[in-house]
Image 1 (cartoon, protein in one colour):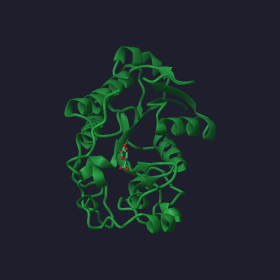
Image 2 (cartoon, helix red, strand yellow):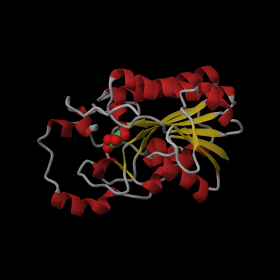
Image 3 (spheres, helix red, strand yellow):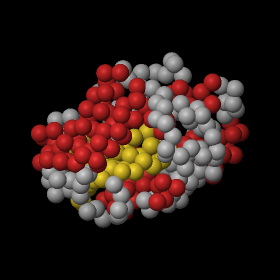
Length: 260
Ligand code: 15L
């Protein structure tokens, strides 16, 4: 398959591009606003420039955004406007499928529970989560109105390895991130799906079944790091934000990142 990846120079983008290319033999078109080796430099909000770059692609893995809290205006721009431009460019280039990097923060104010499914109410914890939730709905519109196929991935904590108590539930390993992207670009019979992008963590809160239904079978588990983390990090049970899946993004003083 020929697959375009936006945000290709980012932390997750580099891993997913390499995995899809070298591990699965896809022809990968890496796109990013930041200049990097092997990546086409483009601002994906520029639909006209983006459209020809998507020609001949079977899917877009849309990872580009600011991965943290911002102002309301920047959140609309980096999640909603950017995703709108990508969807329009896909229509222009007849690309049938998007794999959208949403976030667990689209449902961040959901209380932690034994299993949280994908049908829970969207409860963003930040303007970041609001932008992701809104972009999930935008993908849904393009599925229903234009017949695109969309998988929205509520990604947990993408890291080389888990380093906090919360990560024991939320970790997404690099290997599983590639498995997830591969499953979603190839899943047959999918029109619109929301899945949680986490590893097979013993302490997970989120349901892995929607991902499994698309062929995502995670192999890693943060539990392998639990001994070390629990020995060094104090319990956070008394903290307000430990009640919710979004963790410290639920705090009113969550730091705001500058736009790039
Ligand atoms: C996210 O969506 C963020 O992009 C990342 O910075 C982490 O905070 C992650 O969620 C998380 O919840 O750990």
